Structure formats: C-alpha cells, structure tokens
Amino acid sequence: MGLLDLFRPAWKHSDMEIRMLAVKKLTDQKILKKVALKDSFDSVRLAAVKKITDEAVLKDVAFNDEYSYIRQAAVDKLTAQNIIIDIYRKSTPLSYERHRVIDLIDISAHQDIFADYALKCPVEIYYETAEQAKLGWARKRFDSDKIVRIIEQLTDIDSIVKISEHADCNAVRSAAANQLHKKNNL
Figure 1 (cartoon, rainbow, N blue to C red):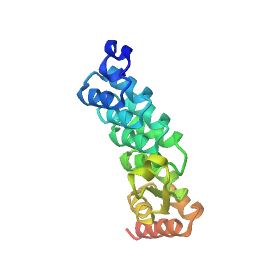
Figure 2 (figure 1 turned 135 degrees about the vertical axis):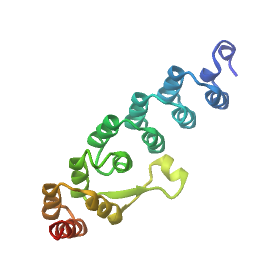
Figure 3 (figure 1 turned 60 degrees about the vertical axis):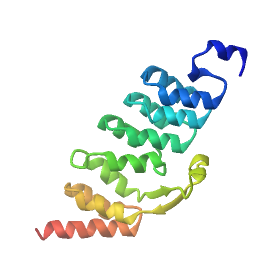
Figure 4 (figure 1 turned 90 degrees about the horizontal axis):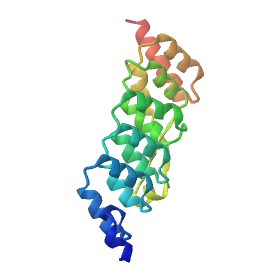
C-alpha cells in the first residue's frame, strides 16, 4: 500500500484485491462506469460490468474492452434493441458479439438482419476454458442448427429467396429452399 492509498477511495486503491472488494460494494453507476472502462485489471473491470445497468456504458464496453470475455459479459446484459442492432451492424462477421446479439434481436421486427446473418453462413465461436476466453483463443464451428432455426422463422419471402440463391454455403441455401417449399405448399 502506498501513502497515496490512504487518501484515495477504495475503488482507486493500488491493490487490485482492495479495488475488487470495493467494486463489489459499489452501487454508484458513475463510479462503476469509470472502473469498467479504465481499471488496469480485467477482473476488476468485469466485476464492474456485472453491476452496470446503463446500456450506453455496456455498449461502450462491448465495443472497446481488450478482452473478449468482458465484451461478452457486457453484450449479455443488453436489452435495448437499438443498441443490440447497432452492435450487430458494427461488429465483424466472426466476432462473438455478432453471434450473441443475433439471439437478442426481435426477429419479427428485423427480418433484414436475420437474412443478412444467414447469408454470411456464420460460425459459432466458443471457448473451452475461461483462460482461453480471456486470451481470445476461440474455436470456431458452423452452427447449422441455429441458421435453420433462423430461416424457419423468416416470413419475408424475398429474404428467403435471396438466401436460397446467394448464401455462402450449401447447408444454408438448402434450408432456405426447404423453407420456400414449405411456404409454397401452405
């Protein structure tokens, strides 16, 4: 403990463990925001993110934290559709954020987003251990079940036709063609 620590609030203490304890007790959203965006230790930032309720701050963390598992924690707390859609549109196709927020978007109101998602034949990103998540060492796999579920929920015929003709992979094109066949037989 440094001499200056005597005059600082606990959430600014030089000892990470003291900062962590302080964050667990904090309720002030402005202070939690400062910690979530600026603390030098990822575990302290994560603890702050878990307590934040301000969607704009969560969006900032979702876009800017250096560690994917902290970005994921922020994304998982989002509820505002406009922020969720913004994250989808601004994130890269293979990012965890894009794959997570697709599950949070209202498909009935945003058919275009789901069609875009299905067209790009996304892969699911997963981590086998917390350490791999912290380091960003992800494994990637195509999640065809997820895409089929999305296509089955699409009601916009033009989007389904576009997917059946232009999707990057056969499995998705086939699922879209099957959906068109079902719709034509109704």
